[in-house]
Image (cartoon, rainbow, N blue to C red; front, side, top):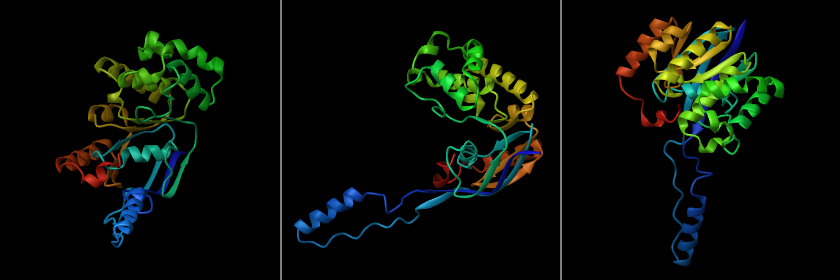
Length: 266
C-alpha cells in the first residue's frame, strides 16, 4: 500500500508580481511628477515574474520504504518536502499521505522561538497526537540524546543552529509518526552526533516507518535507501535503482550549478 502518492505536483513562485512591488515608491514618483508638472513615469514591467520550482511530479512511496531524494541545489527537493509537510500548498496537482507526518526540514520549522526546548518538545508531541504523559516519559531520553543538558529549559531562540537541529532531529526520532520527512541529516551536528543520528535513523527505518530523505551524502543514501528519485529543474529526471540514480545525480553535478533563478527553489 502506498504511504505517499503524488500526482501532477507543481509549485509556482512569483519573483516580481507587479501588483505587490514598489507600490509606495510608485505613488511617491507620481506625486512628485505632478508637483513638478511632468507626466507620471510608466510602471515597470517585469520581464520574468514567475518560475516553477516543481512541475509535473508523479510519485508513489510504499509503506515502510526509504526513498532518497537527490538533486543539485535548486532542483526542487526541499520544496517537495515542504508540500508534503503542508508548509506550502502545491500550485497544481494532489498529494495524499496516509499516516501521521513528522518533518525535519530546516532551522525553525515546527519550533516556536520563544518557547523553551522542553515546551517545544511538548508542543510537537501534542501536534502528533501524543499525551502529556507519553511525552514526559520520553523527555529524559530526548534531552540526553540531543546533548543539550541544562539548556532544555532555555528559549530555543538562544540556541546555536547545531543545538536547534539536534533537538529537532531527536524530537522527530522519538515521536510516533508513520511518515518521516528529513532534509540533510548531515547538517544536524558534528561528526560524532552525525554518526549517532544515522544509527538512530537506521533503527527508525528498521521499525517500518516510511522515510523521504534528502541528502548529498551518497554513502548515507546507499546505506539507508531502498530507492531513489532524481530531481532536475523541478522535474523528475530518474527514479528507481539507488546506484543508477546516484550516477545520474553525479552526472548532473558535473555540469555545474543551476541557473540563479532556479537556485532559490530548494
